[in-house]
Image (cartoon, rainbow, N blue to C red; front, side):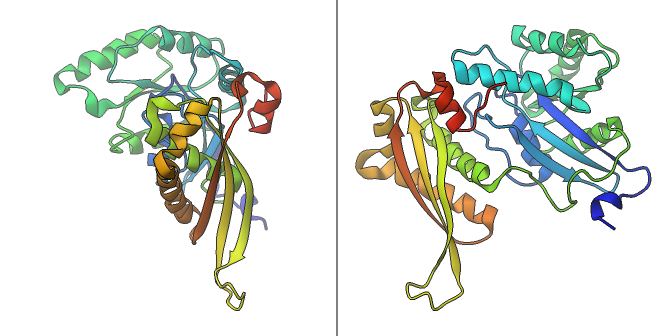
Amino acid sequence: MSLLNSTPEGYKSGFVALIGRPNVGKSTFVNQIIGENIAITSPVAQTTRNRLRAILTTQKSQLVFVDTPGIHKPHHLLGERLVQSSKKLIGEVDTIVLIFDGSQKPGRGDQFIVNLLKVDKNLPVLVILNKWDLVNKSNCKDRLNEYIDFVDNKDWPVFSCSALTGNGCDVLVESISQSLPLGPYLYPPNLKCDQPEEILLSELIREQILLNTREEVPHSVAVRIDRVDEVSMDKNNSSDLKKTAVLATVVVERKSQKGILIGKGGSMLKKIGKTARLKMQKLINGPVYLELFVKVVPDWRSKPARLSEFGYEGK
């Protein structure tokens, strides 16, 4: 009998969309509950571009979390496609987890998302006030009531947590599980992510670019994995020891950005490559050789053909 068809009686499973404005901590939340760095994180807003499916399997349920790009006002074709991706997902999942930055008061962007979700009155929605560790203890009750009044929906339970420390996340997982329908395993129980290996590798590189360049090259960068090969660690091929060779191209929009990425004497590119390679080795569980190339493609974020080449498809 297939393992996917041998789930326990009363088991629950389903898809859970993480919705919210940029930089509210959706990717950090995913990594916290899965226990691994599956989604890339950085202090830069709009870090997430690809729909990432992270899988948490417990004795009672299997939760498939879909981490989406933050909903924001787009300024180019790439931004439009990212927002379209998030909106389209709303009608395709079993439960919505609406994440706010609880350390801040709700704003107009938050209101836009709340109004968007209220269109489907039958969709289960759980509200999370993330970054609760940054809220002054004396203000917690007032801030919680402020958001309860803000969402103005008795059917939307409101929780607080810190995705960074993990405080409150266990209670959330249990509440999300209860909102799911009865169903079998959707993925093998030992699987934690369904993204292709090349996507995960490219995201690890892009994460290091965001962390090391911050505002200098933020969203003008894309990463394409050109080749992934298993090669012998012995020059004479007399050993079975293998390492994974990864060749990748980093695309930017301007020559000045290329200069920043490469750095003086190639120092920045070496730093990015070293940290990305170490993370790749943890992902692959083996030695990795990483070679990076930087290419300038002017205005790539506004060109449909280029967006498709880098995996950002439209409707």
